[in-house]
Amino acid sequence: MEKHIFHIKGLHCTSCVLLTEQELKEQQGVIKVVPSLSTHKVEVTGNFDGEGREEVMRRLSAALEPHGYSLSEDKEDYSIVWRDFTFALPIAAIFIAFFVLLQKIGLINFVTMSQMSLSTVFVIGLIASVSSCMAVVGGLLFSLSASFAKSGEKIRPQMYFHLGRLLSFFILGGVIGILGASFKLTPLMSSILSIGIALILLILGINLLNVSENMRRLQPTFPKKFGLFVFRLKKYNYTLTPFLVGVATFFLPCGFTQSMQLYALSTGSFISGALVMLVFALGTFPVLSLVSFSALTIRKKSLSGVFFKTAGLIVIFFAIINLASSLAALGLINPLFMF
Image 1 (spheres, rainbow, N blue to C red):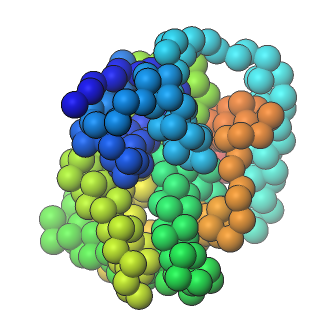
Image 2 (cartoon, rainbow, N blue to C red; image 1 turned 180 degrees about the vertical axis):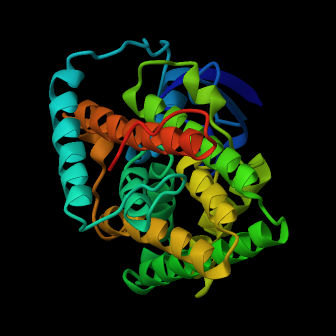
């Protein structure tokens, strides 16, 4: 038995940790894997049949590279690429101005006094689909597709996955909405819950900007066992496995998904909660479809830093809008944004 400790590059969230752990466990000779988000290191224990440390690192790193991670002997230097904001700020400003214009002329209504509209939820879904959290879902799709491709199945498993994901988000979103009704949320409780959602979105937006290494630790997550259950499902090459994996992604530790689940809870209605989660899933669908039917990986593009910072600024905008609206609904501040 040998134990190696490597630095791991590309970790952003708990979902990244789960993905790297499961991928490394499937490699030949590996018995135990202990990754750490706080130290950005991974401890690998196994029987490597005389392979040297460098050989082990290269082989394991090659298994992670399709998902955007890599192993190295050196610690990844954390640095803020401020020049990305030169392009991200004007792009985000144009996008936000466009949405405000649509709001003004009445084509959409993305914010009210204390609630987000479905158009806002859809945009958040689009952003979530290319965030570091949702990249893990893409990793699941790649692994799932590879498993079924061995038996000649290429299209149907992916269709089952997306069907399971959309249905589960609709049905389970409705269940969450019913739970909100059973709690009999008062206007005060609903406003407080809306403030919590806005704060989560604010944290997620700041993390997309990549300006604070410690901010990632503030993201709420499901217990690790939920994520492990999802990743283990993909090992079974059964007809319904892609559908079940799609259903199980509802429980992956993604901050965007959890913020929308809280919003569904605040609706207190099956239909409203179901629509919130369905529209969010539909927002993630275009990019996840490209991920599953091609090899789209935005994080590998040369302008990925600009892209993520632009997305982060837009998420922060929505967070501030909803936070201000919730505080105004409580009478704590005067309405700041009269859209």
